Structures are given as C-alpha cells and as structure tokens.
Image (spheres, rainbow, N blue to C red):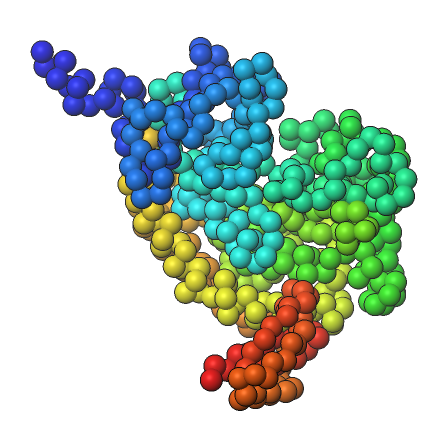
Length: 494
C-alpha cells in the first residue's frame, strides 16, 4: 500500500522524470525503442503540449501543438561530447514526406533544431543574441524555450529554433533551381559559410579562397544552399567568382573607391552588424566558424550580406581560452592560433575611415536602443523570471552548477551567480567598446521646421541609420546629419 501511494503522489518516479507541470511548452519524443544517433536519422513520434503563454502545461495534457512523425538525429560538433544532446529534426507526414507545420507559433517549415544549452549555464547566450539580431533589423532564427522529455526521461530546458534555411520566412532569397544557369537567375540565391566541416560532406562541399586568413592560413568557404550535390558547375563557378572578385577588390589599393571598391560587392551595414555582435559578445567562434552569409539575385540587391547570426554559446565570457573571458581588446585582433583562421575581410575594412565612421555611428545608435545596458539587463532578468521554475528542474537533472564544464572560465555556485557574471561581463564590455571603438560620429542640427497651421503638411524623405528611406509627416522635426552621411530625426511634439 505504501508503494502504491508513493507512485500516486510522485509520478516522477513512475515516469523516471522530474517534470509534471511547466509554464514552458513541453516537447515529448518517443523513439519506439530506437536509439538516436548522430547519423542516420531515425523516424519516431513527437508531441508538443502548449496551452498558451501564461498557462500551465501538464505532462498528461493532450498534444495540442504538434502530434506526428519526425526524423531526428544528434547535431553539433564539440557539444556532442556533453550528456545533454542537441537534436536536428524534420517534421514528416505518415509516409515520410516533409510536413511543413508551425511549431510553437513559428512560421511553417519542416526543418527544426532542439538546442541544448549545457556549458552555457545562463541558458540564454544564444537566445539573447538572436533576439538582438531581430532588434537590429535582421532575420535571426526564431527561438522558443521548452522542456524536453525523451522516452519518459526528462532532459531539461531546450530551445526549439529554426534551422538556417532558404525560405520566405527565414533567409528570404530567390530559390536557385537546376535550370538557373544564365542571366539574372544565375546570380542568386546562395547561402555560404565559414565553418567546421562537422555534418557536411567534407572539403568537397567547399572551395579554397585565393586569399589567406589573417593568420596566413588557407580559407575554405562552404556551400550551404543549395547543397553542393545539388549545384551545377555554372552555379558553383558563379558564386566562387563573385567572392573572389570581392576579395580581390578588398585587397587592392583602390578598395575604398565608391564605384569599383568593396561597396560594389557587399552590404556594408550587414558586415558592420556582424562585427558589432561578435565584438559585443567577444565570440571566440566569431568570424572563423558559424559565419553565414548569403547573396540574392542582382535584381533584388544582389550584394553579399552577412548573417544570420549563429552559435554564441561560447561568448560573453563563457570560455577559458584565447582570452575569451577578457572584456578588453578586440576579438578580431586574434591572439591565439584558433583565431588566426578568420577571413581578412573585417580587418581590412577597418582600414577605411568611412567604414570606421559608419561603424561608430551604428554602435552609438544601438547603444541608445537595444544595446543600452538597461535594455539588455531587462531582457536577461525577464527571461530568468520566465525560466525560474524550469531552471531548477534543469539543474536537478544536470547538476553542473558549481562544477567546471568545458570550456567555462567562470563557475558560479548558483544560477543567479551565472546571471550576475553574465550581466557584469556585458557591462564591462560595453564600457570598454565605448572607449575604444574606431571612427568619429559627430552630429549637428541642419534644419528645424515649425508648422503651426493645422492645414499645412510637408512630406520629407530621410534615410535612417540602416540606409533605408523613410517618409514621415511631423509638425516639428529636427534633423541630424551624422559623419557617415546618415540622417536621424528628432521629433518635437507641440
């Protein structure tokens, strides 16, 4: 009788887990006796319980967000050594075809990732970075916290997120088909990357740049979309030649020329923003790994664009090599053999004073907004509150608080210790960058217009800090011209 009562009161023992209810969505995977491995994928069942934000989800609730088949495998490189694994999965229909669905409110697709924060004991370095990417005006993979159960075993806090993929709701570039072999259709879209070869076909899925890294090593650039096996020789030749032309111009004496220089080939603002996010976070993998870029067709801009941001778990001081814990100095400057693998692009761009000024202005613009310390800390605190109950279960399942996990620099005894370190590190990093970033970003008012008549209107076209044209109608507007040529308006309400 006693054993029977214990089972009723503690279903955690019955199910081998410590989860009964959660304010986070619950993802349940049943492999039907199979073992998940790195390769190949297995086909199994997945259900998601999500009763909506602010409502409690119970492990015994019906699957109301997704209930169907998936194919799944482990993902990641060094992180596969951790007991808490990340997964790549594909939603499928009953006969194995791709099943494009919306998961947890994200746009419909079939390729997804269940990311497992482990060595990042704040549980939010990637989550924070992708949120900043969206606030900066870019596409960043959408992310939703959840708790995961696999075959009845509780696995902790996970982040369900979008895989980087060409799609109207992800990397929104032209679809490159097998018959796109000439003219404008050949010029896009492409997604390429600088990364490890884990999970790819190896060197055959890449090409070697004609220009070395900042450490003098050879640089290999990988095809991501289309996959190498799906690309025809003309398509590979086009994107390789485009990158070669960009690198040739960037290394030339005329690289700053506004007509034939680097501006002809790249979306400068995207290069600046990648530099800023890598330097804010001092990401040791930045530039040299997980660095994605894409090129759309020429009739839709057609310049090489950096992004989306990816893989920032070894950032914000969470690493004990390559000085990654320091809040001073530039990540781009290297400092160890690992960082010598970075392309020379970002270092060379800083030789242009116009680029420096744009960088400075963009930094100051962001510092008044999403990069303001108050904004960053409010976001971290709000996520910590959201994870308050779940993080206790996570660290009960994975008792790593107070213990070193590769490659931690700081080891906090409590979850709050880890968050305090993260915020203190960010604060010190912001201060250092403020005092050391290159360029000049001065401004001065150039016109003040007052219209007191209610029937008088003026339509004014201005360019914002991202270079986009904006139409505004205001009674009183003060305009500032910055040293990079952009204009910002200050509205005076009457």
